[in-house]
Image (cartoon, rainbow, N blue to C red; front, side, top):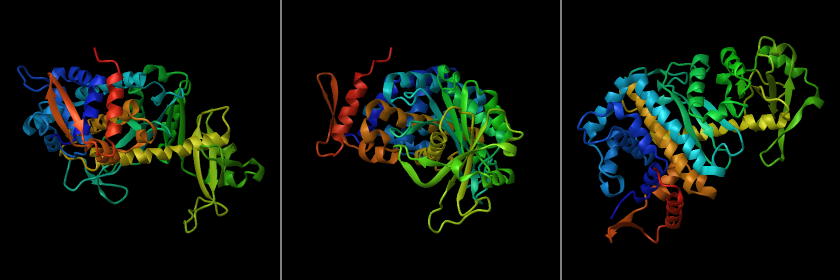
Length: 439
């Protein structure tokens, strides 16, 4: 009997996407002579353990208990030594891992075809901060703006749209005291995210950067606007006195009803474009869109709200697009919260190591795990199953038990017939098997 038999879906995803080859090649400089375990295999084993629900290095033991499914797994001391070695490698090790992921990502999107996040012709990248609580004195742990204690990483996710989930493309480890609107960090996170995308999305405005009001700083918007020939942006803005005064002057006829994704009018919400003094000092070509919404019963208004309406604002450089469509596109940035929830459930609930360099390697491991949890559904699942978050994938698919039978020099994994999702697992394995074998 084999436990976690559904994890073979992730193992096959690793093999078919050649992620194992790419990571092994990237970490070849850190392989010691006559080493028994390949550094790439060790790192991928940790990532698989995290994808299956682990939250520390020692959880790789769940894979070690099933060598028939996951192969030989290194001991805990060997895993720990590799993390220390990569942490000592600094930026060189991080760059090697990131380049390997970017290379594989381009191949995966090609394999996915119409299911890829770029099927609509544009890639959407959401940047957002994540608070990670620390329960001990770890390096760079500090008091956060929410009066907790820990770290404040800045993450970037590619949005798969309504039909899918999302995949990480940036993870910048920051101290807990790091601000939410630090322009330099947003620029660095955007650079990391763009480096993960295929080169064809770095021209023709085929990439959209979205942020909340944390990205609404002069320096970051100037950086985005300087790349406006090939980059689009939709950035939340803080409502200043000038913006508030401009809103009060907008005539009733200028407000456009907000819409839902299916095209229906959203009741109690409107959008309008602002101009005049509130745009002074900002880059040329920037559009400022204001949204007003009737608050929910019991909601408390802010000082920046007006006439009993909740006000929000964002800036964009997209032209020749209806205001309602731009407002809907920016509102869909809320899907980034789903990606953050999935990351917290996949190794980001805490940073298990002490040194900041070690925890940055851990963030790369978490990203690899999240990549696998996004790529496997994209390549092997259809319908509602493509949108399942990590916890549901683990409960329904990965936790399935099976019997491993060896016959005729073949290994057959027999899943229990009474398991409700056996058919789904079988079909997913068939779709993975139909993909081209790696060279």
